[in-house]
Image 1 (cartoon, rainbow over the protein chains, first blue to last red):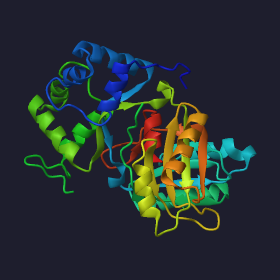
Image 2: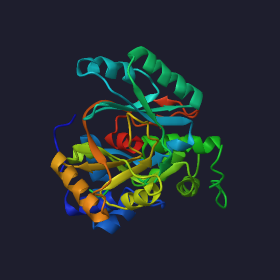
Image 3: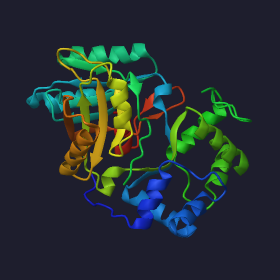
Length: 153
Length: 186
């Protein structure tokens, strides 16, 4: 984890806030971004490259709607503290697991799974339950109320 | 949504998949990024732009734009806040929660009684824990949710975090750590 925190000036904050949600679809998109934030095209490109180097920028591009593809769910396990490390490793070892976090709760290990189809997803969940012998919560999404994941900086 | 626009068919179009893969890598940081993408695909710049416009309208993408890693910008705290809302109110409360600035995601999920009474999940990010708690308190007050049982589950450690990028057949691919994508999926 990078310890360094990159600070933003007002122009930079405006650039990131505005263009998390839109991408100018014209031949010189960075020039259009620049114009709306009082920067030059060169400054925007250099800043984006700098952020890329510093780990601030994931990419300028698209966030795919995964719900369209295959099956996914959020799952949780209640893991005794002294087993957490080992169980977390076991869970992370599945390629179907995208994210795996410790959270403060009796159910303390939370992970997201995605598979090409429901059957494969169910098999992985059963496998995890069988291997860990721990109670597993399977909490598939029923309805999304806020799919847009950009947020104000 | 059928993914159709005037000219470009988005569904089941192998060329679209190629473009999507490149877009998950990111646009080149050069003056004419779409021209450069076009070179990689053997397309004209105009065709790349036109196709991206069609994609932006389709349900294949959630959004297009700058994707940042919030951790590096100092957003170090996140709580998954879970709520136990009466079934006949959950839609209405979810809509209200989703409209709040502090809330980045808002999903209904099933209860699993007796272990798990909560049916609505939302994410709140902040620089520190205190800031997340403040945002939550403000939200409870603004929306009058004092009577609704809820708990913030702060993440205290990340064991695995992938960008959730998919290969063409929809197999998850392990690559590109992204705090943002993690928040997205939860």
